[in-house]
Image (cartoon, rainbow, N blue to C red; front, side, top):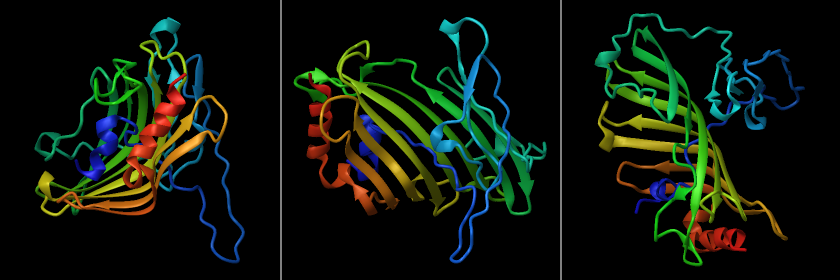
Length: 277
């Protein structure tokens, strides 16, 4: 199994995004901050998550809101604030893009805007993915604690930018991701819980345009952090954070703290210790 697929296999962490800092402080200088009134995103309640409470250097932030109506049928929505106004210019034939843009579906809402530049199309998206089958086993009979399947539910928000060449073939993708996941041993998500959150940026570079076998991925930030929801002792018991480069042949070069790579048995033991009563 390739190192970069460990988290996908266990669903311990999905790709999540961190926003760029609102200001950069150089040596000998005082930081500069700009306060922006975002207003509200509508609905009976809305929020900007504590991780994404800043506006990035593109002037974009992400939040969530509940729609008005039946509280049992509320939907998660995202909206973007973009003072620079990246809007679709209507000049990109999306049917020619390779690979095509990801579409919305039953478990996701994705909004795209594309502009044609001298070097090729540039497309930006903002999206939300949610769990259609909460508390289903992650890997039945394989990922267990005390013989009981580990179950999960999750939500993900992201912002992505794709760069295509003049032949409409993709060259690079940069994606800010944020995922929140909860693990449980119970079909209804009750009992002891483990919280796994991720907040990092993935940059994908195609060695050959649009050829998926030539992708190099660079991860920066916190791929995953696991915390026990209850019990004595330290709440944080594993962390995957730093910089990682994954080559097309599956080789991984990691800098920082990557517990699931260096001590997978210890991570799984920690998960079970936190989940078992």
